[in-house]
Image 1 (spheres, one colour):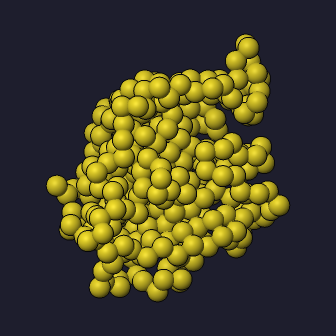
Image 2 (cartoon, helix red, strand yellow):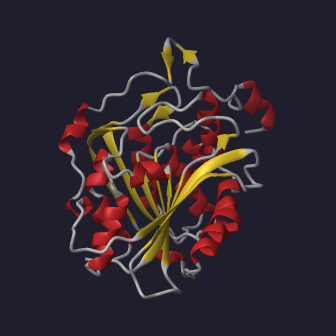
Amino acid sequence: MDFITYEKLGLNNYLLRDDIVNGRSNNEPTDVSGDVNYYPCSDSNKNFNVPEGKIIHFSDWNHSEIFSGTNRDISIYVPVTSKTEDLGLIILQDGDSYMNLNGPVRATSVFDNLIHNKEIDPFIAIFVMPGRPKGVKKNPIGTLRTKEAHFQRSIEYDSCDDKYLKFLQNELIPFALNEINIEITDDPSRRLLIGMSSGGICSFNAAWHDPNSFGNVISHCGSFTNIRGGHNYPSLIRSTEKKPIKVFLQSGKLDLNNIYGNWSLSNKEMASALKFSGYSYRFEFGAGGHSLNHGGSLFAESLKWIFNTK
C-alpha cells in the first residue's frame, strides 16, 4: 500500500486512551473474573532457608539521551553466587509490577528459589519502569497512569522501531553493569526480555530487531494489536526468515477487546505465525483477563522452559 492511500484511510492516526469510536473506547472496564483460577506459583513463596539476592534501587533515573526528558525507576537484582562474570541477563519491563512482593508474580522470590535449587543458572535481572516526563509523579501500583505517563510508556513500548532496543543496549545495561561490577554473557540464548501488555510487545520487538542480543521473550497478554503497528507482527513472522528467538506467550479468553483490537485473537495469531514459521514457542491460553495472574502462576515454569531446565 502506498503512503498516500495509507494516510487517506486514516491508518496513520493514533487513538488516545479516552477516544470514543462507535460508542466504544479503549478505557472501558475490563473483566478479570477468570483470574480467580490463578495463584502465584509455589516458588514465589519466600523460603527462609534460601539466601536472598541483593536488590539495588535507583529512583528517578534521568540519564537517557534516547528518551530524553524522562525519569524512571530501576532496580537491579544480584543473585547469591560466587560468579562475577558470564552471568545470564533478564530484563523486565514495567519492573515494579513483577517485583511487587504482594503481587501475582513476586519475581525476586522465584529467582532466589530457582537459583538456590540449581534449576536455573545465576543471572542478573533488571527491573525497569517506563519513562515519565519530567515533573510527572509516579502512580501507585494498581492505579491508572497520568495521560502524560501513559503516552510516554506507549511511545517506548508500543512503537515498532528499534529505539527501545538501543536504550537497553547503549544506556540501561551499561549503567546497571557499571553499578554492580559484574560481567554478563553475550550469548543471546541466556538473555531474556519479559513484559506484560505493551511491555510484552516491547520485549518481542526488541528481540526481533536484534536476536543476536536477546534470544528469549516471555510475553504476558502482549499488545500485538493496532496501537502503534504491532498487529503486523503475525504477517512479518510468516513472511520473514526465521529468527533465533524462543517465545513464551500467555493470554486468556477475557483478555482486552477494544478499539485497538482483540488481545485474545492477536495472541492466537502470534502463536499460529510462530508455529507456521517453525519457531520454538509455547502458548498458554487460559480463562483470565488482562492481568499478570495467569502469567504469575506459570512464572517459574516459563523461566525453566525458556532456559531448558527441568
